[in-house]
Structures are given as structure tokens and as C-alpha cells.
Amino acid sequence: MSPTWPLTLLSTVTFDDDAQPGHTLVTVRWATHDANPTEQATFDMSHPSMQMGWMGTFMQLQAFLATS
Image 1 (cartoon, rainbow, N blue to C red):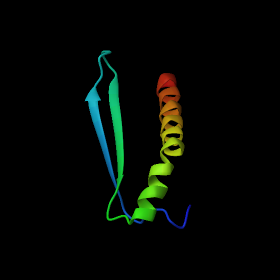
Image 2: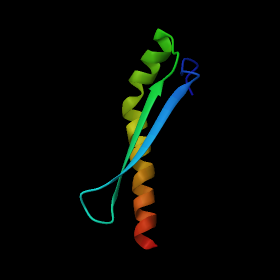
Image 3: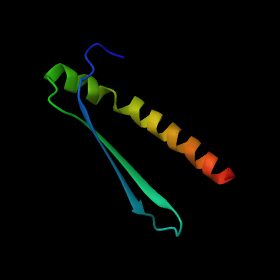
Image 4: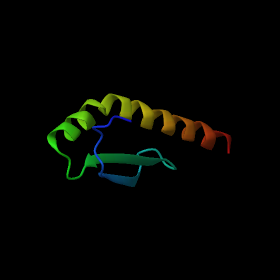
């Protein structure tokens, strides 16, 4: 992890009914808390990587749930 990664983050996860019956929409929001400008810039530049990581995790979950 980058030495300039923010020390404190706020993660908010919400679960909502999806338009398709029996499906759930999961929204993950991640924000820095008390970050200095360098930490904030590091966090902001990492969005594409974080998005890929979260999407990969949810794709694995979806595949697992499909076999259950």
C-alpha cells in the first residue's frame, strides 16, 4: 500500500431492492476522513483500481450465489 494512503476511511454500504424481483442492488461508497491533500490525491488517483477490485469481488459473489 502507498505510504501516502489515507489512514482513515469511511465506508458506507447500502442494500436496496433491484428492479428485477429477487435481486438486490448493493452500493459501496468509500471516502477519506481527515485526509491531508497528498492522501486525498492518492485516494482519488486509486479510484479505477478500487472499482476493478470491488467489481471483481461482486462478480465472484454473483458466481457463487448462482451455484447455491
